[in-house]
Length: 488
Image (cartoon, rainbow, N blue to C red; front, side):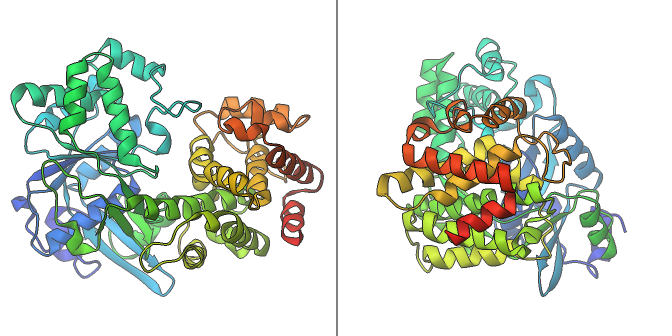
């Protein structure tokens, strides 16, 4: 049966349906980047509040800037912006239909419709999931990258922006002029200090054309830091077949693991939903939570994904079923990452390693190694290199992290151990391939010719460990390199 508002009552024998009357909902949030993660995470938390009859004036309007966003809009519009969520627990599956989104702005050049919607005083939160690499961070200085072509366009054409951030600045300019006031800008991406980064991007861009507006945004808007966590695979034929097997025709269903976490600073200039009523943690200590998650879970994903791809293992669960890769993850996480991670209430770093081990090993989650390996040029600097820096500063082991970097360099050559082609899997794939090929004859070129490593590229202990690991991979293969590390 087709997923639609008119069919909801009939679908309740197949899945839990919204108990609230969607005609009573009004928008309070505009979310940019309506992918699987948003629909399984932020949209779900809001849906749970609505199921309890709360916060019906905080419904979500979707928005986006890419061609894929326009495709997503068309599919969701055909099913009244409803989404089927399938929880994949090793003990069984559970389905529910989420209805917290009520509209999706057309994706147009210049983003006029999105700017108009963000300018509406009813919108009090503008949230984003635009990936870790989407915030225009200079890879060397870690500051705002004003030289990007999209940013340069927005500086020259502030009323017809190309980027999400140009659209947000334009909307805030209108709100200030109309007396609508600021909004909370809420990043939901896996970046440490994501609210601080979002503030810097918006204020820096505004400052290029209007210093007074930049000051107003800095002083009046709020940018809560947050930590988001839920493993949400991409949707493919298997996922669509799974939901069809439940008797539901959904063009864009979402599967997710049986775990969620959201930790947020309580800094919202125009109010917020009562998310604490449905399990969200509000704290001034987000940094400690996000450091644990980013270093161990997101870093762990990078430890696992590249060797898995090189060996032709399809999913992260497949990789964890490989005794060498699972042991590699445990050894690096426990001895090279966890010593630099502080505990949070009710969770030590070592306990978190075990939790992540179980989550990665869930055979129901068909999360591909390719998806996890995507955009290494953002993920390694964010998730792996900070642990290397800590290890070098404190004198703790870094050989496994050096091996992880060597696997990434080998991955960027673009072919697996069996010779199969690895299709482009990074926004900077061409540049990475050039450096990866230079590293075949001089592995240190991977460290010195890429902008990611900075001063640690010159560190003798790290460079020696990296070169040794790279030569072992090149001469003896992935499994031999893993065995050599584990036996050492």
